[in-house]
Image (cartoon, rainbow, N blue to C red):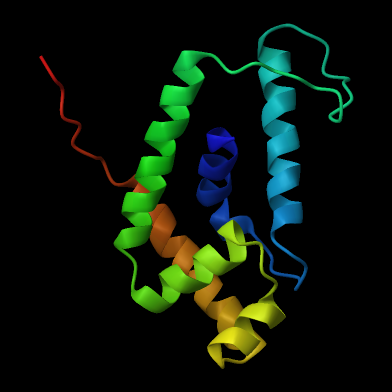
Length: 135
């Protein structure tokens, strides 16, 4: 799951807002992440996503927590309005029109703010981070 968010944020510049919920774009990325995983493992990529029961390892949980923390830290660095729109669009799954109505903005302004917010978030995530190592 965290790979999906990381890939989505890295591909933010390629996202075209059609007014549909952004979750459809995220689902496509998730499907591609799973297919890549199976391809890399040398397993067939044809599978029924409704029946897939992949048990995450403890390492997967740690990596997911680390990625989620990176995204949350990067979100905290954004201006409040950009952060609010990105959370509403990508975490809450709201449409452009729902965000526009809630925030009292035009749909075009929400699209523009989404684009700028994703670019800023991507830049934050690409900055080298300092990791603290515990001895």
